[in-house]
Amino acid sequence: QVQLVESGGGSVQTGDSLRLSCTASGSIPTSTFMAWFRQAPGKEREAVAGLYTRDNSPYYDNSVKGRFTVSQDYAKKTLYLQMNDLKPDDTAMYYCAARRTFGIDWYLPARYNYWGQGTQVTVSS
Image (cartoon, rainbow, N blue to C red):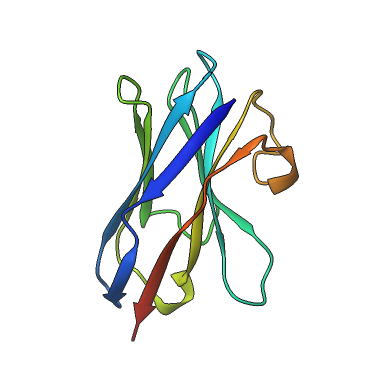
């Protein structure tokens, strides 16, 4: 079993930055795929960014390319999401997720085996 705990959310203004962290514990495979999703009220959960932990290959949704950076500290079993130039449309609950295998369908929530409880990000104009 794998447990994921997010932190780092908060309330900021347009143009500000935040860094989210997701710390994993439990039986974590040597290589796995981890991702950040977000869900705004009344909307479906959507993929933001992902990372193949074995080779640090990043994946991004087009809406955040150039503004968000996903990275990891493998020794600390922590996934990060650096979010720059935040916009009101980025307001959502952000979730960390992990799956046992990598696939090109990384953006599908149903493919993930483990989820964190979420951390709220609110961006005001």
